[in-house]
Image 1 (cartoon, rainbow, N blue to C red):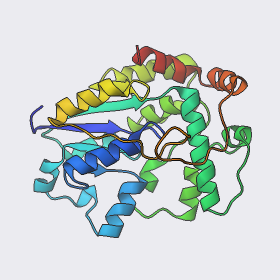
Image 2 (image 1 turned 30 degrees about the vertical axis):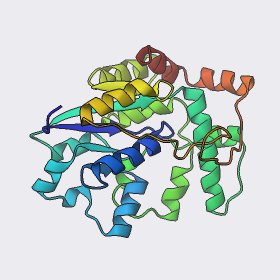
Image 3 (image 1 turned 90 degrees about the vertical axis):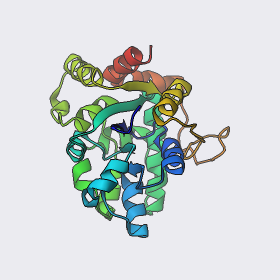
Length: 260
């Protein structure tokens, strides 16, 4: 790829984005060749007194190779009117991703001094109807923001995230077939759609884009067999997998189609 191309790497929570973020920061330089739009990026820029994306000069914008993070959306394409934008995203097996998000949320509840709640209560009763990433982007997170960040967003999270990033916020009202149709239409415009279960081919494509090797580690992962051991509040079992498979049929259809 030539220098006119810029990669928009959309980061669905709990799909390996932290590991990619660390690798890309090491290769491209944080807030220079690689810009992170999410809670980590906002916090790091504030701590290091670095400019936000809307404060970049034209010469600085021209140096960016990759942008990623939970806050990334189609709205950020306006900063690069003369660049060729390549969109990429990694999916994850839905039930596993949801359980990982639950465990992450319970760790964050502990940091806020709150007791953990059961999975069903978190997933069904503490769900928020929609994302509100634009409201959170670019500023220090308040306690209210953090409480939002540890909530569930209910069923078919990945599909909702993808539509939200593309500015299609009608997803709470969509039936399953409509949701799948709209998500597939969006993903048809992407340069690369991969999964963390088949990460190696995706890493090879990123390395081809960058023209260099990426050292992708195992940051921010839960479980005994990873280098970074994080507390697990709930483990997967057959009953939970059946329940989540039934509740997330749109996400499973998307995941199955694009991971073939």
